[in-house]
Image 1 (cartoon, helix red, strand yellow):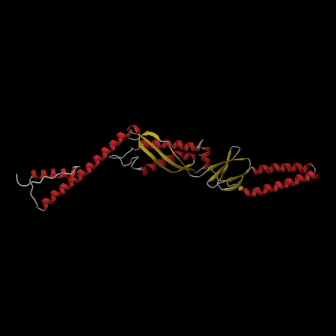
Image 2: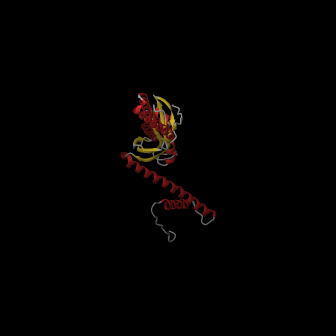
Image 3: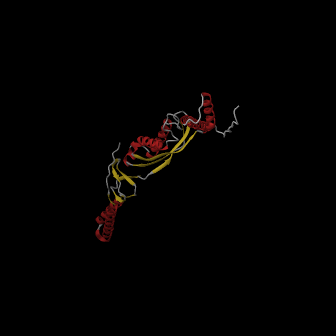
Amino acid sequence: MTEEKITPQSNGWLMLVVSLLLLALSVVGFIYGVTGGGAVPIISSIVLLMIVIVLLTGLFAAEPNQCVVLLLFGDYKGTETTQGFRWTNPFKSRTKVSLRARNFDSERLKVNDSRGNPIEISAVIVWRVQVAAQALFDVDDYEQYVKVQSESAIRHLATSYPYDQSEGEEISLRSSITEVSESLGEEIQNRVQDAGVRIEEARINHLAYAPEIANAMLQRQQAEAVISARAKIVDGAVGMVEMALKRLMDDDVIKLNEEQRANMVSNLLVVLCSHESTQPVVSAGPQ
């Protein structure tokens, strides 16, 4: 990887003043030569004017959160990170690189989750250039590089987790957004490290089943929710029946034989587990 060298350049305002003074000297020499000083002052003034023009081409400005990478005939000479009006060797080529935060919304990708279900997923990536020399010299197009590697990481992430949570699985794409986003950011960072880029944030902004299975998956989710609710109702009902029988026996309120106890358990479970209101039957006397 290219190692970045921070090389502060000269103050641009100082060089501008020097250039203006040389320009004034050139004008005075030219006038002196024309008015009788001979050819030497005129030639010297022209040469001095050309030097001034060359010096002025070395002036450049660096904005806040922007750096300038300097090359001299293809050789990397350093990076200017000081903002303001600066001057450098006029023969050095200057490439400005923004260090500001950037973001992009990836395309909606159609991939299979860890269970093989087709899903649609996209993410928002916030990033910035951290090492300008690496961004320019270690990859061909660092912006396109970040986008391609990000989409590759999103695809890999989607195949590593299920869309929805089920028994025995703690993390899923839908229910563990924070954990999944952190994992996505770390994976993208590892992939773009060579480009001198830092990932500020990565978060999923679109997640859905593919249209062809969306209805079937919705029905399955509804069925799983009903089963889960029923299981909780049954667990609670059994606990309440046990508590009721124990309380009746401990307080010696009523003595029940096995058949009566079975009937009471059956009736209580029907009342507690039924999804509709039950209608009690009151016995008016012995039959």
